[in-house]
Length: 270
Image 1 (tube, rainbow, N blue to C red):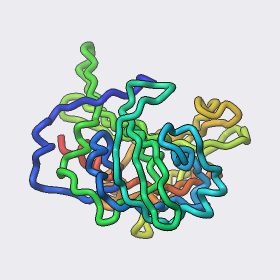
Image 2 (cartoon, rainbow, N blue to C red; image 1 turned 90 degrees about the horizontal axis):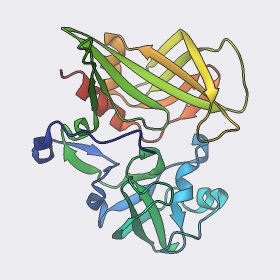
Image 3 (cartoon, rainbow, N blue to C red; image 1 turned 180 degrees about the horizontal axis):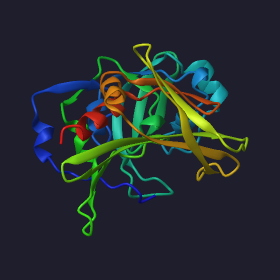
Image 4 (cartoon, rainbow, N blue to C red; image 1 turned 180 degrees about the vertical axis):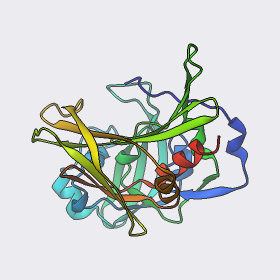
């Protein structure tokens, strides 16, 4: 899993006095110490990845079932009392940590924090995290084609979506990729709809959907929409987070998508 490396092109942003409220601190997991975390993923999301990261023991071997987590963890608030580095069995290059969580009703449990993926973090940080204004810009990957002079700026791939800006000379275009998985295989799939928190929609009914085998769940098919964002799309997406998506007939409910606004803000600056 070496597809994403962190590119720091503006190190001074870590010391900016302007801040934004967020829930996912990426590699700066220490910001969660002594914070209260509220579990926010529910059955509507149909995405139980993050519940695999709750454990009964500090060695992170004894987990909980999804059903138990849904019934007992949702809306519970845990206090982070200890943070320790942890190595993933399948990739030691991804910074991870073990969070010790305390809750009066449930007791002491542990959570495996994976800094690369926000969708593995099923919490709302009570009071939010205060991060520098341009904090997320350090993760933008920049590549230059030495033959054409074309420059590409890409946000990290967060499970199902990312932005990419292509710039050549004074002209630039911004695109978005959105994906979803299904057990069913269809042909001639078209169309994507994004629902935003302000009640607006972004609809692209004529976008052709690419289909291949899901790399993580081989029994599923991955439906991918790749499309250019127009000025109206960009304005909406920099001011509102995406709450739900529909790719062809595949619906998804997004929990942590506020950071997508910040990545897009980074891309429109230059």
